Image 1 (cartoon, chains in turn orange, green):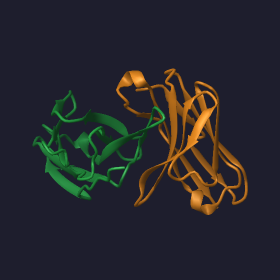
Image 2 (tube, helix red, strand yellow):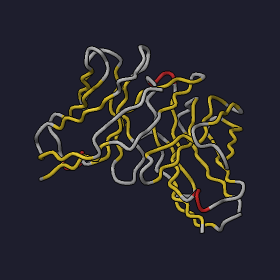
Image 3 (cartoon, chains in turn purple, cyan):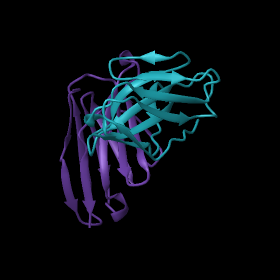
Image 4 (cartoon, chains in turn blue, orange):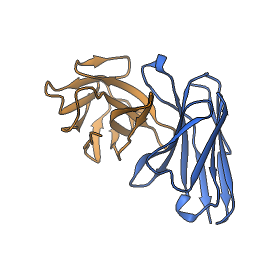
Length: 113
Length: 112
């Protein structure tokens, strides 16, 4: 399995509080992604990064920000969590040298009450 | 971006071939077809991808029609561990990163 970890794995937080999820990789892959998965919607891309300090928006980026200060870490921040952000969040990595396969982390289950 | 259509669910007997169809009638000439699967609550797992030709690896075979408007993922000898949601995805490349648009997939149940 690709070396991808996500922390925390589970989190319960209250509406209006800030939340940061961390994705850490040991594969030195260039690209990193954040997805959310909700029933009936499959996986949807939130933000992605194509290098250190280079990020861009995905399909459902409103309410989220990201940062990538070093190759191995990609942070997803909910500035003020809302109940609609209750979801399972997956991080993924890919690299041009691996035929554009994406490797996914184990996921973070976030509940906003 | 090309959209994909998959049946919501399928059953397959253990040991038999599982054939999962996908329609992507609006696919453009330089878009690849990717297949991933997600077992229970784990992160999705890459299976196979192709452009025009049929492809085979240790996990599965991918058959793409000549007009590229549809494809079939074949698991030659399904096992109980193949029970999962299977996603057919058409790849869009933006800025060098690979943004894969996941739909709702096909839930494959392998029956003993």
